[in-house]
Length: 387
Ligand code: NI
Image (cartoon, rainbow, N blue to C red):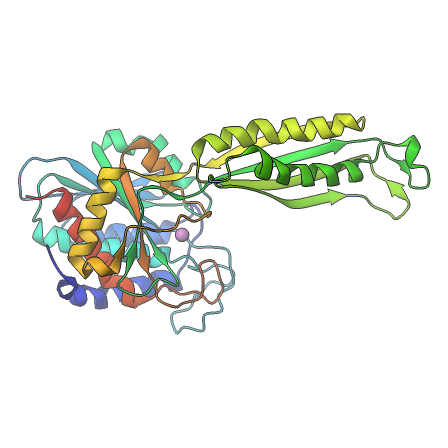
């Protein structure tokens, strides 16, 4: 097991990779240059089992330990950038206007490459490490697609681990919790179908705008009156579209919104109760509704044993005081959740210091965090696959 001093040398090299990726961001599944860069680096480390083209531009590479037979564990990094015009003013700013690494996936990739180099050199573990480089995290589909393409069975992966940087958490600190750590994410659309007409004679029409207003308030009441107050559910109406003129009551109103929860069963509740409440309110005034619900990302749920292993690996790196096991779950979402549905594992946050927040145009991954992320991966492998 190593403390942080082992990893300073790798920081310089990994920082150069990270800044190259930062200058050359790519989006979604369209990551040809990023994937080629990663595959070339992996090959240069002496890793000879590299499979590209999984989930379009994803990569899985295997490193065998020297400690004999053992299980295969997956370490996952995401690779994609965001459609944002960069305003970080860093010398290594994006060369592509309108695309930038505003979530630090460049750093996640560089840290997993750094760990890959170290692990390929030392191989001080039993079994196998599967390095998973995933496309399209921001789209929320890349993780699912890699699971659907069978990476868990194909590579015999028995446990999976993920990591994300966290602005506001000090450099050298980690934060994790057992159980739900990030929210599930769904979306819904409601069309309120009334009967339009002249605004001067509302009694001859069925006014969908007034009905929509009641539905919006009713949805908030679902949260406050129909769910357990100790369980988190967010229903936010985020789009509202109606009307064309001052003197016309329209036929329809479109309502759209998002559902976030830390409790998987509350997604079922939302899918059933949002349309039930909306339909009941609409029918009370003679209107109808159309309803659509889309499940986008599951709740990210850490498993107990793997969370303990993650805590142990991080504490051996930076000491007990720098690793919180009482992370407060966030209502954002993460498509690593699909991998955690397929296999037991754990997702941990790594301090990025006091930088701009994720998805902000001024954000930049903090290269000071690099050795901590690399060291965590190495310690985790040597903890789970102890030779
Ligand atoms: Ni991210």
